[in-house]
Length: 99
Image 1 (cartoon, rainbow, N blue to C red):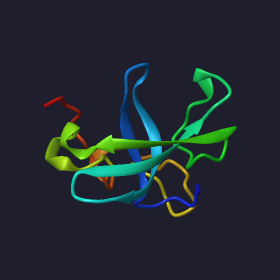
Image 2 (image 1 turned 45 degrees about the vertical axis):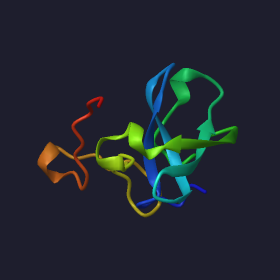
Image 3 (image 1 turned 135 degrees about the horizontal axis):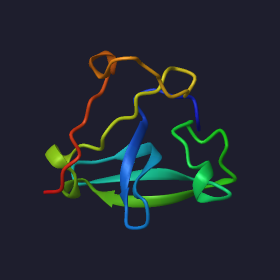
Image 4 (image 1 turned 90 degrees about the horizontal axis):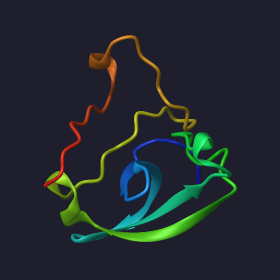
């Protein structure tokens, strides 16, 4: 866990709207994810789970996401969030919307 890259995604959360997660596996209709658990809300970060106190497994329905795809995080190969001066420099730009 936490090595960064295309397995770092966001999933919907009833409590926080969106939270970082790690894609473990998926088929055509569902995805199994590992959701980092943090000590408190203010510590939630797109850090690949480095600061997590543990992970929680979950199965999400891909039909709940636009195009049936989980939004990818903009992190580098070490799992650190890419900081850019201009949004056009982001590898993945998502327009968050509900179906």
